[in-house]
Amino acid sequence: MSDITKRKQEILATIIERYIATGEPVGSKAICADMNNAVSSATIRNDMADLVELGLLEQPHTSAGRIPSQAGYRYYVDNLMTTYEIGIDEQERIKIWLQSFSGEPDKLLEKAGSILAELTNCVAVSSSPSDSEAFIKRIELVPLSEHTAMIVLLATSGILRSSVVRSDSAINVDIAEVFYNICQTYFNGRNVSDISLSFIQTLVASLGDKVFVMSPFLCAISDLCEAVKTTEIHLQSPNNILNHTELSEDAFRLMDFLHRSTPLENMLSSQKKTLNVVIGSENSYRELRNSTTIFSKYSVGDRESGSIGIIGPTRLDYARLIPSIKYLAGIIGTMLTETLDE
Image 1 (cartoon, one colour):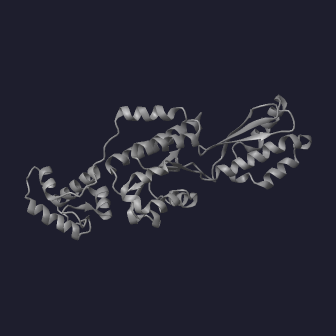
Image 2: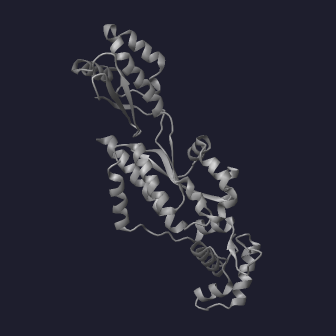
Image 3: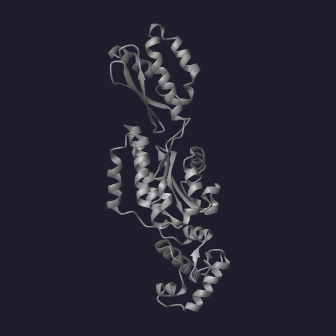
């Protein structure tokens, strides 16, 4: 669309920003006022008609004004939008809200999702880190009672998984020391994909008289390694869909889509870029044909590990939301990396 003049670009941006703010079709008089009457209403109407011909604007049947098309939003995001920087005070508030969850990846993502849903009035979706190539950084045994303990596994991808295990034997200092030595010798530093059932069976066979005490703990470690390789989807405020009248016709299909983890997981895992803004029919799922998805990847260490973002209507304040989502993703990555380095 190289034939769009600078004036038409200004008119398109004005219509989109007014429509985002009000939800009402925008007429030539309003644009004329925004442009300080430097251009006549007749000229603006002609330019608006050209933008309709190009597929960037639409005219509702009951209005003389224009609204953006999905292609118009796309052109705006790619070519015209000026993003806002998040203020220092807001950055600090977000950090404080998240700080107490920094050592627990799943709770951190849930809290970040809650913040994002509240800020945007959209559905927030995030994926936990998952990595079949991750290595076991450390495993800890935390006694809870005489016969129960929590096994905590931290992987190099930043994933923290835990499981409560019951033992028929009393969990004393000697058992804790045997557990520690086994982890040091056989688990720490090993790829989680190596911890298979056959690996556990071979290890159990070598334990001699300790086999009956250690078996439940070793099986728990095997299960935790499987969990490390599995992506978990966190969904926050799905009912926010109902707050947008433009999504009312799609509300039932969208709610059903949001509660099916497989398509959400596939959608997040297929993100190609660090920041992904997909508008309307660009989405591969029919349920999202009138929605926008904005997702940003976060990295743990030097590896991309998961994503966080929103699902909402196409009428979104892109200029303000995109920086907020990018910032949240950056904070999540930083906090998970710090947990890994401790």
